[in-house]
Length: 102
Image (cartoon, rainbow, N blue to C red; front, top):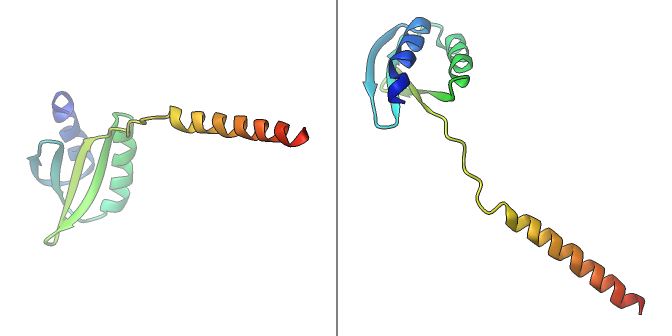
């Protein structure tokens, strides 16, 4: 996110009134003004979605914090296992069906 850090800051600042900015290892934290943040948040999510970024709102000690980070889709592992089990099930049903005919 380092290459687009300034771009994210500019985008958030153009939509919200930002009080402070902090950077974590995996996200940017913005303390924002609480007035009308729901509609502004929806607008921000639409803008960030095209950049493969995700935003999250949190309340902490009476403050509204906006977190922006990269969206990483979960990696699908072992997608072949259900296919193999399905093929084995069909094969066993076919074998069992043929055995009963005899």
